[in-house]
Image 1: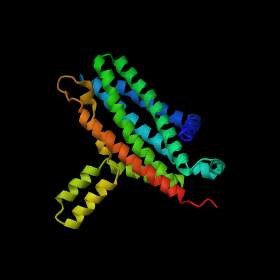
Image 2: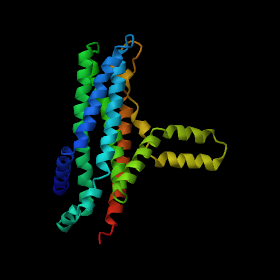
Image 3: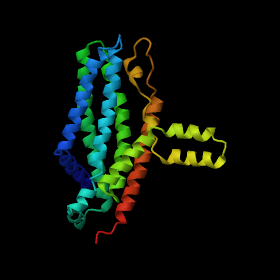
Image 4: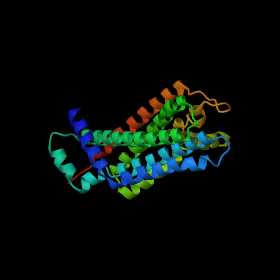
Length: 264
């Protein structure tokens, strides 16, 4: 465990030095504070607009950070041959994969904290949100973090056997498909053919169901008149369990592929 944490810490340090990381965070903060100007164009829904655009910016730019950094986690180690030096020491291949994954998760957690602080400041500047809304943002950001954990695991898996360009392409398309899983399942239910229904159901369970993490929106955060929607802790716990199981399967598959690679 100590070797895994050491690799995770070094991975975090490498990611912090990446200039792309700061550019994406800057764009996310610009999007969040731009929502203040857009919110003033609405009639009495400024907080909802700020929250919708803010959480959307955190999700989208978090996804970009997860992809652009995750696709090079293993590939750069092999290209620079630093992995050979690590594996020559008493470090197992699965420890390298787990350390890289945990390091990127911690990087995402820090980045989400910065962007969440920006969203809190935007709400504070607007001045109309209730004090409880600042606290209730955290469950929404937590669900975004769970979806990014799945995206990171996908990027890590592809980086073990593909180039960064293809890994980014595969991860991005699966990220998009993951938000339409329920539509695919509904299409299968409407089909009259049993093989089509079976195929749609199989693809639905195989693809990452990122729709599981869309259970909290601005209405449940604001808790204002006309937008009252309580946060369901059971749904949050279920989404957490799904994230742990799916990420565990993806990381295990990444370890399996990486251990079978021939570095000669």
